[in-house]
Length: 115
Image (tube, rainbow, N blue to C red; front, side):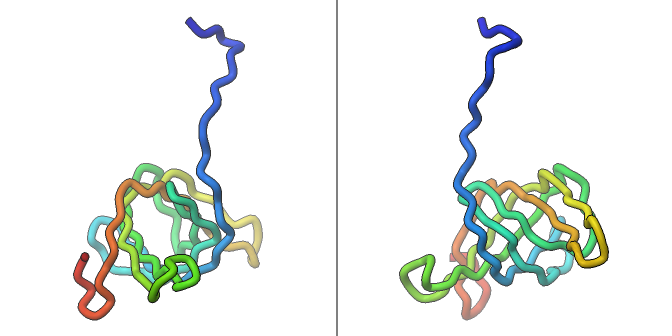
């Protein structure tokens, strides 16, 4: 049994400071344009227009450049949930949302169908 003084180690996926165009929506609503601040295999931090409550389900569409995929540019449809809201500190500071990625699929760019 662990004591109250025992530290728990939590693995955190490596983050990459990549600013990429993306789109997001809540509950099959309208897509909003945005851009990533950083991304990892388990989540993404991105700019948002309005705050969204934590635990809100969210869909993200991110176009991955060929430099990351090793092939032609690919678009990824991710499903997840908002885990944190970062409010602006001033006029020049953006509102940002952190979302965990629960699953993803590659999207066919020609017709938008999920591959």
